[in-house]
Each structure stands twice: as structure tokens, then as C-alpha cells.
Length: 176
Picture 1: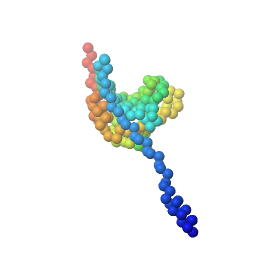
Picture 2: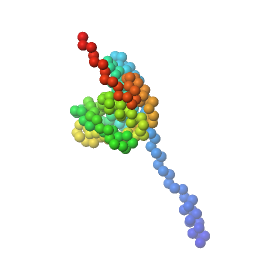
Picture 3: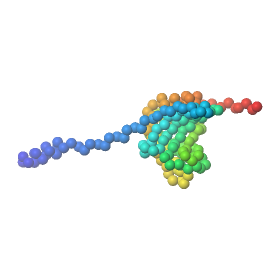
Picture 4: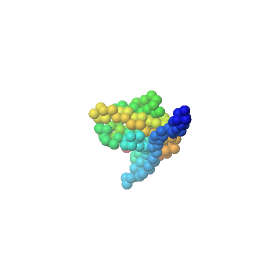
């Protein structure tokens, strides 16, 4: 009887195995540079949970400001015609747009798409990106969202965008 009580006490006193720590959220980084030609580039980016891919919101200001959302993989996605990229926020429905595939990454510059993607990005906890490479193999990555709108607003502001507002089309250039 005493032996049974000692065994019960020993089992009850055994601590539960420790849980693996949750993966720390990847930090978003802001960069603002101007090159020798005077082209300003501001970006907010995060490394994917795979530790290799990147998700970027970028503004380039040369003759006119251009905002892009970019998905960069460690190996070239491959050059191809525009094709579908799906972006999901917190596992919700996909927002699918045609993105450009110049070879090293994929990106979109459509102002309406940028407005929708950035508006959802700043309210989300995670972002999933799905597409195919030039060989039609699936490419997917998951990213931590920024947690607030500060960095995205900062990037958009450099290009004269306001978060959540589709910018007006650029004024037609005066023919000379």
C-alpha cells in the first residue's frame, strides 16, 4: 500500500514535458535610400517563416512615383508572362491578381490592388502567398504581418499614397 502511494505521488509530481517555444514573429524592416541618379526608394519588408523568402511593400520615385508589392524567393522564380499570384490574410479568401514575373521575383503595381493588399496587410497577423514558377511548380510562403500600419503608411507616403485610398491616375503628360 505504501509503495502504491509513493508511486502515485511520484507520477503526480513529474512535470509535464515543456512545450516548444512559439516561433518568434519576424520583424519588419524599413529602408529609405536615394541612389546616385537621384531615384529614391523606400521599402518595408519581412523575411518569410521559411527564413528565405521576402514580402516587400516598396515605393520608387523617379520621374513618377510607383508603389509595388513584391514576393521575392531565394531562387529565381523565372521570367514569364504575367500570371496569377494569390495572397491570403489570416487564412482567409485569396486575393488573386496578375503579377509581373521579370525573373528574380514577382511584383504588382496596380494601384487598386496595392490599396486592397496593403489595407488588409496592416490589419492581419499573417500573409500567405501562392503562385507557380516558370516551370509551373507551386511556390508558397507565409509571412508575419507588420502588426500595425506605421511602416506601410511611411512607404506609401513617400509615393504620395494614403493607406486605404486608391490614388487618382497620373495627369496626362503634356505633349511637346
